Amino acid sequence: MTPLHEVIIKKNTKINPIWIMRQAGRYLPEFREIRKKNQNFIKLCLNQELSTEITLQPLKRFNLDAAIIFSDILMLPYGLNQKVEFEKGFGPKLGEVNIDEMSKLNEVDFVQKIYPVYKAIKKVSINDIVKNKNTIGFVGAPWTLLVYIINQKSPKKSLKKNFFENNSLIKKILLILEKFLKIHIRNQIDNGANVIQIFDSWAGLLEERDLPDYIYSPTLNLVNYVKSLNTPVICFPREIKNYKKFCEIVKPDAIGIDYNIDPKKILNDIKIPIQGGLDPKILLTDKETLKKEATKYLDIFKDHPYIFNLGHGVLPETDPIMMDYLVNMVKDY
Ligand code: CP3
Image 1 (tube, rainbow, N blue to C red):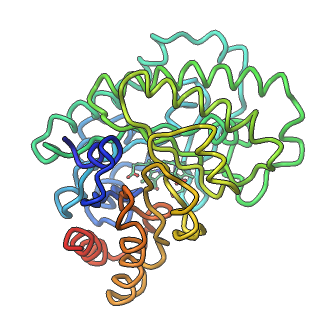
Image 2: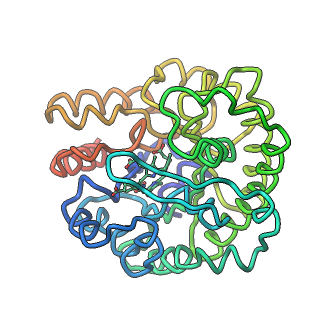
């Protein structure tokens, strides 16, 4: 059995597999080398040879237990024919939504537009380096994608004032997302992804009263769909106020926690396998601090099924030597 399945399905507490969010990315010089020559980020994600190579880069360096496919949650709106660009120092920039065009889109055209993502997953999952390891496919949660689609850029700390104004538009987009997220998930699994992670990066922006409509209900629907394909699903509802309630309602197979969460409290609150938590900024300190902080998580979760990861993506300024130290330290624990 693969390491993540051991923990998520068999609830094995003797091992702590490790993978890192954004493990393929800007902190690696070999990634920056490729990126320099490929200024268009979407095109890079659609280059199956290069996205395979980038996905495997961290596995060649570090003793990680899983590959996460080099792609982006915004490939979905791109596949829905919304304009998506990434501007240096600004982040994603999306075009206006054309809801009539989006509503008419069919599955074949969507898959046609992003199929190299699936080809890359296939290539990664059959590569020898990934043998006996996991290939993680992923999607953005409906809420986080809705945020990007309507807000047309990262929302930073709050949503624009009139975000909820056009309720019928929001409803239409959520239905389209439900349909195409399922297609996107199924194609990733059909091509070799054996775990799915759902990133809800902006879950923390919502008030309690809005969670049922925008988070619980659409995410539960997706989680049930992934389960129906016999594939474990990890949810990461970043900065959501009540992880316990989220788990009780949505029932993912495992839950990713952000770095604001007190690991001792979550251990008491949550029975399902847990992933992540360590603040990515700790990797910018020194080995001694890193060892101390990482050990804290390993100690607290020593009798609980636990996958090691960070509480958000690894920062671009991270020294790869620190990453190597962390991976070995977790392996030797
Ligand atoms: O984790 C991995 O190694 C797999 C690849 C991956 C990327 N994005 C590549 C990427 C994954 C899983 C994502 C998910 C993603 N994308 C999320 C959810 C997780 C999170 O970070 O909260 C979100 C919100 C996005 C949208 C996105 N993509 C933003 C806001 C940005 C710009 C900000 C930034 O960090 O640069 C991106 C760009 C992006 N996606 C990069 C990478 C490696 C950087 C691209 C570059 O080289 O400029």
